[in-house]
Length: 353
Ligand code: NCD
Image 1 (cartoon, rainbow, N blue to C red):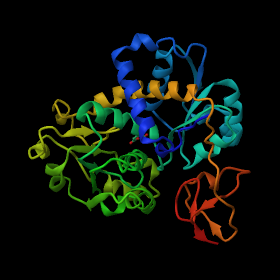
Image 2: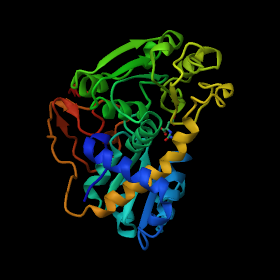
Image 3: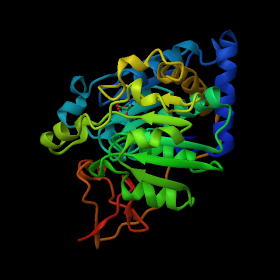
Image 4: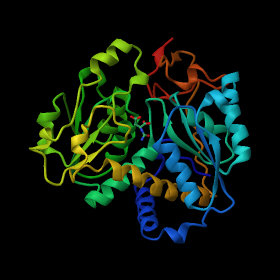
C-alpha cells in the first residue's frame, strides 16, 4: 500500500509517470472512464476547500468510481470528540482510498498509521499540500515543457503557505532551479523548510521583500494568499494582508514567457486586470488538478505490494513539540515521536522539556 503524505514520498521518476498519465488522460479521457468502477474514494475535509475537494470528486467520478465523505467536521462525530485515528479506522472500512484535509499539521501521518487503505494528504495545516504540488508540476510541464533550469519566484505567505513548502521541496530535486522568495520578514519561509529542503539540496535561493524588483528575472511567478486562518493575531493579519498585489502595470518588465501561477483562492494578491494576460496560468492550473488527481488515484489503487506507512522516530522524554498547530497537541493516544531533534508529525524543531 502507498500513501501520499509528503511530496517526497514519491520519487522524481514516479512524478514523471504521474505527469505522463495525466497528459494521456487529457488526450484520451474515454480510455479511463471505467478504470475505477466499483471503487470508493472517501473525501474527509475537516477544513474548507473548493478546488481540492471538488477536483478529487470529479477525478474519481471521471474514473467511473464513487465518492463519499464530508466537507465540514461539524457534521461528523469529530464534533463529539472523536480522534483522527478512530475516524480513519471507520472510513477506511467504508472506502478504498481516502483524501483528507485537516487543520492540524501531521494529521495524515497519524491517519496513515491506522488506515487499511491509501491516505492522500489534501493539506495539513500550514505544513504540506502534496497534491497541489502535483497540480503545479503538471502545469509547469504543460506550460514550460521542463522542470529544470528556471528561476521560480514565490510570493506572499511563505510561512503558513503549505503549497509553498511542498512545491519547494519538490523542485529542489531538479537541476538548475533557483528560488526567489518574496515575502514580508514576518512571513518568511520557516527554518525547517530551509534546512530540510533548500539547504539539504544546496539549492540557490534569495529572500527579498520587493515583488517589483524580482519580477524581471522570473520564469515562474507563484503568487499565494496571506493565510488569514493561521494567524495567532488578527491585527497582524490586517497589517500584512495586502503586502503584495500583482497588477498588469507591475508585469511590464516581466519575461514574455513568464508563467503566473496561484493555487487559488485569491483574495487581493492578483488584480483581476491580470486575468486576460496570456501569461496568467492560474485557471488552467486549477483545471489540471482534476487530471493529475485521476492519475494519482489510479497509481495508488494499483500499487499493492509496497508498504510505506511511516516508521521511525523515537520517544524522547527530554523533548517536547511546542507547535500549537501540531496534531501531537490534540490527538489522544499517539506517541510523541522525534527524529533528528524534530517532531515527526510537523517537522518543527523540538524544545527541551
Ligand atoms: C490552497 C490551500 O488550501 O492550501 N488552496 C488549494 O488547495 N488550492 C491555497 C490557499 O488556501 O491559499
